[in-house]
Image (cartoon, rainbow, N blue to C red; front, top):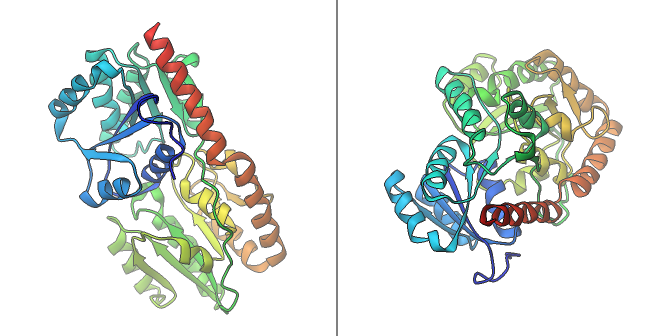
Length: 363
């Protein structure tokens, strides 16, 4: 149920993003709209119809927006309301910056993270940082301290920057399936280079050959699906490392997984990390992006040096062979999520930021 105030009294907030599906940023935005006071509207610059429908079914005002001209007409129609624009990802930032500049509307940029691996992505990262330095941008909210550091290095003013990590709404206690005899490690995410499915397989293929009771599952889809399946087949592990595809409901998987493995090359504050912590599934991860802000090695998770698949495998082996440590990590992770990454408390910080930004823009 939405915690927003009544539409007449609430601050109008227009979110802009392009999206290919319901991933971490989309999950964060949906929860955010439902929990943070304000009259939220989500304009998808590119998105599959089923994603827009998912937001609408949850009670969020969401619609597709075809092109910059359509967006500007929509913003002009609502200009008298003085809506605040909140952008997500590069295309949202670019279109939002143009709209806010032309119509003199308050602008908040949410930075979920960067993936500057290709020349095009590096250019997008550079341009994003340059736009954040301009007077049109009132606030830049980073989901992790490591992302804020990138902005500081690019000379974005410190008074514009704020770190507000992702959070989760309270959830009913999950009861693990205690009947299974085998041990299951999971990868959850898009099968694309920045998420490191190849690094996951580097670690898991060797471990599966070493531990007959170990299975793995890669939940997601993407451009590296075929090459991942080919590697699994070549190792003769097609019955033990499965690729069920993209999942719309993680509930049953959290009941089955003994560990979540995050092999990403780059991250912000992954929603899937917080979901695993809340569900009581121990996490083994590379220490990239905002992950070390959340996890302390051997306290509430296990960390490996970035891109070091051998170290990732050793940490997973530790988890597999030390059930007492696994229970300790699980319990501490659940407390960390409840104490520091609860959506209700974080939504209040967002609400105050929106109110302050709108007030300063009117001054």
